[in-house]
Every structure is written in C-alpha cells, then in structure tokens.
Image 1 (cartoon, helix red, strand yellow):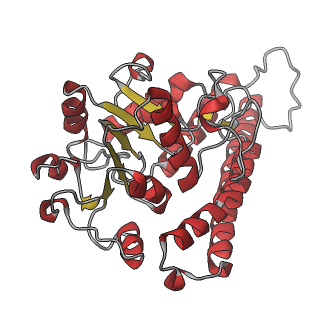
Image 2: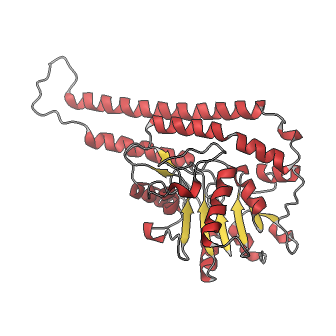
Image 3: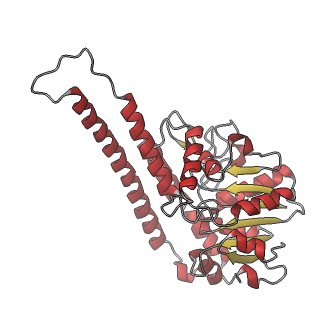
Length: 338
C-alpha cells in the first residue's frame, strides 16, 4: 500500500505559509543585525547621528522594506486569484461535472506561477538553507504544543505513520508548500529520514534555492527535475524543474512516484487532503480521505456539488471511495481498510 498526504491543512491544522514567511522575515532581520558593517576608524560629524544609531536606522529600513515587499506579494496574489475566479466561466454553481471543476483548477496555473515570480523577486528566502528551514519547521511545531503554538499537527498523525511503517506501507507527503525541508522539520524528520527508496517518509514539494531564494520544483536541488518535467499544463522546463502548484501537478507527482516504484498495478493507494488542490489525487486514489474540521469544508462542498458521496469515515460503507475525517485518530479508530 502507498499512502500520500498533503501537508498544509491536512497534516497541520491550518495553512503554514504565514508562519513560513514570518520565519524568513525574522531570519533576514537577524542576519542583517549580525552583518551590519563596523564603524571603527571612521570620522564622525558632530551633527550626524552616532554610527550605531545610523546602522540601526538602516537595518530597520531594510526590514521594513522587505516586509512591505512581502505584503505586496500577498496582496497581488489575492487580487489575481479573486479576479480569475470571478471572471472564469462557467461559475462555481454551474460546474457540476468533475471535468469542469478540474478544468477550472488547472486554469489557475498562470496565477500561481505569476505569484511565484513575485516571491522570487521579493528575495524573502535568499540565503536560507535547508537546515534552517528544517529547524524552523521543527521549532514551530514544538511551540505548537502549547496554547500559543504556531503550527499544530492534527491528532493521530504520528500514530498513523508508525502504523503504516510497521506494516511496510510507503508514506509520502505531497505538497505545494515552498520548502520540502520546512515540511521535513515539521513532521519530525531529519535529512536522513526522507527516504525515497526505503520504508521511511518521502517528502515531495518545492524547494528553496539558497543563493537566490528562488522556489524551484521538486528534486531540482538534487539535480533531478524529472519528477515533474515541464509540460502542456504550464510547467517550466530546465534545471529548475516544474513547480508544484496545483491539483494537476500533485496528481502528476503521485503518478510518477507510483510509476517509478511499479506500484501502479495493484497496490492500493490512499490519499489524504484538505483542499481543491488535492481533488484530482483524491478522486484517482483507491480511497480518498478529505481532512476537515467539519462538513462545511469547501472541498467537501465542492465534491458534493459534483455529485460525489463523502460520508464521515465512521459512516463509510465497505469499498467507499471518498470519506472525510477531522483527524487521523478517527481514521485509525473506524477500521479504515481500503
């Protein structure tokens, strides 16, 4: 059996992009603070601000500028996304077939890629290496254990992974998140635990190129951009690979993992996801599990609009293709056998 899980909102209780960005802003601020040029040996005008004060002012200006640029990236994405969704035809209420919804989801690729271009130009992640991202993910989850935690994992995730690995099932995380290393840290993995060939957890997500902070496709930093080769869906070709941004990209990544392992012929595939970027994977899996706090989930409503039955896992009949659960304990509790 192969198990695939989305990360943001599925393994975690909420999207982590804000926490990831806040970590990067703190990282850049701390780096600026430690790399400010010294002032010894320089003459100082009596009327000018002390050199220490000038350095502080310059540093604060840089931090404010980066924060403002990042806010602009977020606002531009929200504006683009809203404009595309509102102008797309047919509208949501008239999309009643799976193929119509899939066409809409795939049509957003250019919106996502334009936003990635802004993220790269912003320079938010420039100079941040995998070890720092991994440590940040780990620290944010550790802080998430308290009432004021930044990132919380859904109950039962660790138990599900342990049970799967004990049975020899392969576990993969497939995410449109910008940093595979951040996900590894949040999931409690070290670099050595990301095991593509063995029975560990394999994370498939975008990666940050340290020297310029660019977000590149899965495998690009290891020289293997083939997992998501560029294609007709709007992916880019070349050393940066194809960025993982939408439902089609995630479906293609899952298919390629299964193809490489020869697992497409027989072994059941279970997919866990919380948003429409997971829809194609959920529908293609042997069993799709929508992870949601309750039935008002936008993904559940979308699937039901398309005529799909999505019962809670406790009410699922034998062979049910789609179910929903609010956490992984529920999945384990209600005899979930695909």
